Image (tube, rainbow, N blue to C red; front, side, top):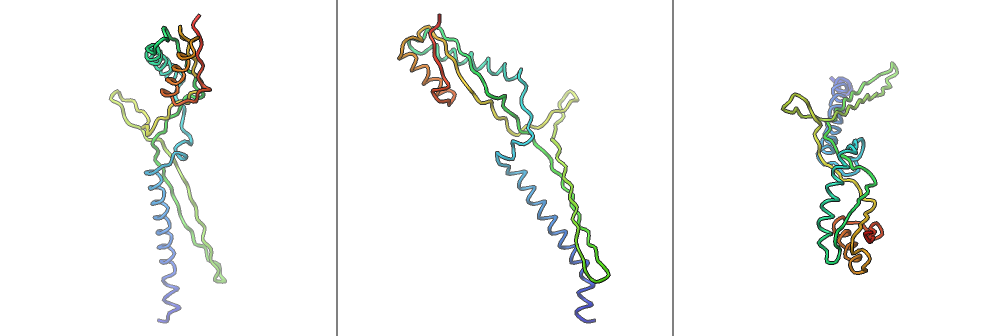
Amino acid sequence: MNLKNFLSDKKGDLMKNIAAAVLFGVLLILAGDMLFKTEDTEKNGSPARTSAAEEAGSSDLETKTEDILSKVEGAGRVDVMITMSDSGEAVYAQENKINSSLTEESASQGDSRGIETRTEENTVLTVNNGDGSSSPVIIKEMTAEISGIVIVAEGGDDILVKNSLIRAAQALFGVPANKVEVFKMG
């Protein structure tokens, strides 16, 4: 048996081994991507929270903020309104399935070509609740972005009180001073 015959017999096995190695490499890359997702990849396709949940959270946040700001010296009674630019979003755990196959076609002149077929399927993972229903698995929840804060205080006309309330709001929410307004309660 000469070398040419030996290599032609092993050519089919070699192509299968190469295809298997490529598929295994792709699966390793995807598994690593699923385990170590970046913030950019987490954002695609994530549904937003409901506005009712946002309003309940915002109202609770406003109440807590009013409680703390009313303790600032000279502020007196305080009302707070916080507006959000979006409703936030939740990132759900997903199962990614990829099927890949490589087909080798040979022509009578000895030419050959490979055709790769690839399908991808993403499914949101769910867990069964005790009552028979299921809910999606949440990996991370991103809170809504604050677009503005209005503080109405009894002592809102005093420049020192006003400055203290603005700084307190900045410290609490990490917003710039131009997103916080303080007014005197009428």
